Length: 189
Image (cartoon, rainbow, N blue to C red):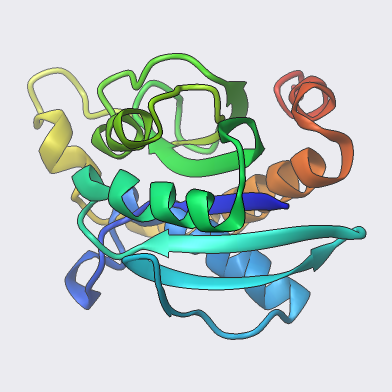
């Protein structure tokens, strides 16, 4: 069993924000696979299905971003999933807009959702699908304002392709494992 957690903030007022790209990715995967609708569970919304013969659970924590671990940890405990079998999909300021990268383990790099998951799991060993949202220009706005801002019209037009790349990265992790998926995804030109 793999647990795929897409991070974001709950509520309509946050739907179009950069911080919610993780929600978009797990929504797209669920829709593409025709899995059941999400239902409330584990302080989030949850569904499960099978991909390439592998059982997969999808989770969208419904506390705010900095409480993501309060949803991921109980889901992982219930499903008996080790940190190494958790994939967290999140926005990444340190990557250029449209870049998608896979990483195994490491620190939180200032991302409060990832920080919360590390703290609650007691381990940083989970896999991350990092979706680049770029960063504000110098002196334009601070990081918190940036992640809670909406995509501009050009970015909104490009967003479906970015989400599709992130979904492909998640599929590659499921089908080939994190190491092979990193070789496929992170070396793209």
